[in-house]
Image (cartoon, rainbow, N blue to C red; front, side, top):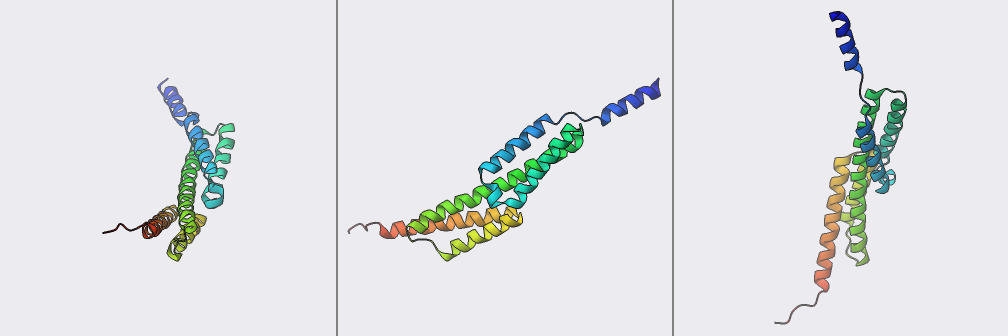
Length: 156
């Protein structure tokens, strides 16, 4: 009886639970990435997220819960990464458009944005977000200086 109980317990330990929360989290992260235009700005990470989500769903249907969970977790990570890059690039583009509309955009800001876009295409989240942040900051500073220069100077 002891050996049978031990066998039963080891079988139960091998059974994974349905990864309901992980699947839900991955779906939500993927939708958020989609809404942030991650497919355009960070296609490598976004495509990986979509593929992992599809695998997770297939594994879930096959009751391979451990594999479904692992794929869902990867899909979530890649979705978040692609969304982060897409949002950083979009914010930089918006700041740069505003600066450019007032004739205040430098080549340096443009180069930083190109660097961010190239990094996002390559799947380098750290570099993409960093370069996009610097591009945005450069554009905001250039816009501030341009507006300051246009403001009427107080009389003394």
